[in-house]
Length: 553
Ligand SMILES: Nc1nc2c(c(=O)[nH]1)N[C@H]1C(S)=C(S)[C@@H](COP(=O)(O)OP(=O)(O)OC[C@H]3O[C@@H](n4cnc5c(=O)[nH]c(N)nc54)[C@H](O)[C@@H]3O)O[C@H]1N2
Ligand SMILES: Nc1nc2c(c(=O)[nH]1)N[C@H]1C(S)=C(S)[C@@H](COP(=O)(O)OP(=O)(O)OC[C@H]3O[C@@H](n4cnc5c(=O)[nH]c(N)nc54)[C@H](O)[C@@H]3O)O[C@H]1N2
Ligand SMILES: [Mo]
Image 1 (cartoon, rainbow, N blue to C red):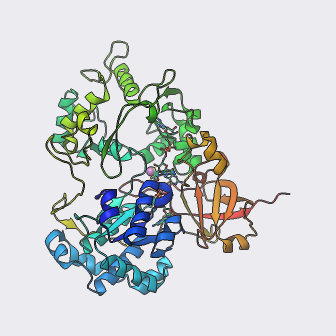
Image 2 (cartoon, rainbow, N blue to C red):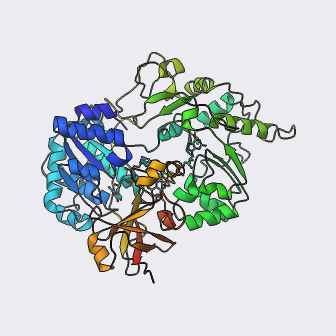
Image 3 (cartoon, rainbow, N blue to C red):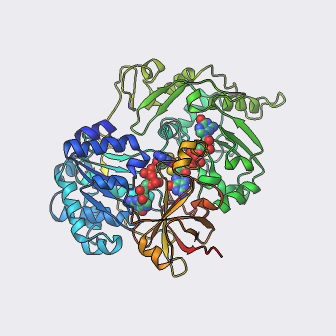
């Protein structure tokens, strides 16, 4: 997020939520937003193909078709320009390539956009007026925007909108992707991505590699001659590794805290790939669905049993301390990984990795010292600051630097803010006669992804004991389906059998399923492993399916 949650709660005059089920998936922030609406009269617009609970607090709900976000956002921008509601001064002083962008919007007339999105022209006009006239306006999004083959372009279209309205680098504005897990932001910051080292320093940059080579005592491994310890740069993303295991490009997998048999798209393909894979090590807190494919299981302690820090969605670094003691042989993840690395360095006395020294960290404190010495955005971070009352949002450049709650103040990180041209294109798989409905997928409040944790909590299982598939009453009637009937949902890749939840939360033609229950109840039997070309995120939010009632006789 460019802006902290508290800032948005206190300073925004309008909030645009697009593709985020905020009150179920980010309940704390969802609560802050509801409070801003109720107490300060903030105007809320929600764009979501489903009537989710936060829409009850919205001035306007735009219920567009899944996969039509670029058309929707461009259409709103078109109306803003037509009425001269744009922030001319901001565009002139801080942005570039505006003219091409403005021209690219010509065709996104309300009529054209209404046809693609199924949102009425009146609603489009009202949305544009509310977003433009209630400045500062904050945009919030989550997986409804990113999990598409056009995920990156979807995000660019929203960045364009915020530059058009001059909402960047100021309180109450910004582009605010709500990160999913407690520490997914921290994991990215630490370089758990293919293309960057800690602090987003690019792996293809030779100077950066030299810096890490020397800090990690890797010797001469500049990555050019095929003999690099870093291997081919950049490496494979998570989503490419699964296909790699099937094709033989990837022979071994070391999986830490992921359950891809439940959470990757196209489960049949995943299971096949993992059966083919020669060797798999899984580091987990529970024997998960994926553990059935693992050769070795390494037991980790849970969040409640460890010391360290999490960096949350607003780039804020916060400490964690053990509340309870770990059981049995389980160890913190960093310790297991260090021990494994040391074993690799010293297999039968032979240093097969070429590393010069072992991974001999004593504590998370010592690891943070290394991070702050190598990653400038964490330059001023240390445990005494993390444990103090300071609110630490990175970049924190030195021990004297107070941190950066709001990004891009005065100037963008790249200098001028660049308008990108974004065109509406179809999802990889669109409905056909054989597969006439659109499937979109996600989560419910009561479970967490593959639900290895939440399915072990009796109270949650009592409330949400099995997978439910949302289907609109009109579709249900056509197919002779009643509430709680067992239905079979089929895509070109597999099938799912679960109970029907007949509801106008989804519009006609759209089905919503989740991936919280294993086997035949998992929606990932159906999803498509088509990826965004840049981010390599799968298109979890659109594929084509058919639905049948399962007869009892
Ligand atoms: N209880 C609970 N909370 C969680 C999680 C959990 O599993 N359980 N997971 C965490 C994680 S890692 C993440 S990433 C977040 C995810 O948080 P969210 O992204 O908010 O959750 P999702 O259910 O994936 O989908 C978000 C919304 O996108 C909408 N949507 C579907 N298709 C489209 C589309 O084409 N366009 C638009 N604009 N919207 C669309 C859906 O209707 C849904 O309301 O939640 C986090 N919080
Ligand atoms: N159809 C569909 N599929 C999706 C999505 C969607 O919207 N639709 N969303 C995608 C998204 S955004 C995400 S983030 C992924 C999530 O996918 P996963 O990351 O695979 O899901 P989790 O269930 O969170 O799996 C984490 C595993 O880590 C274990 N674990 C928990 N704490 C620890 C720990 O401290 N150490 C270790 N070693 N293990 C631990 C848990 O037991 C669990 O089995 O799912 C993706 N899959
Ligand atoms: Mo996520």
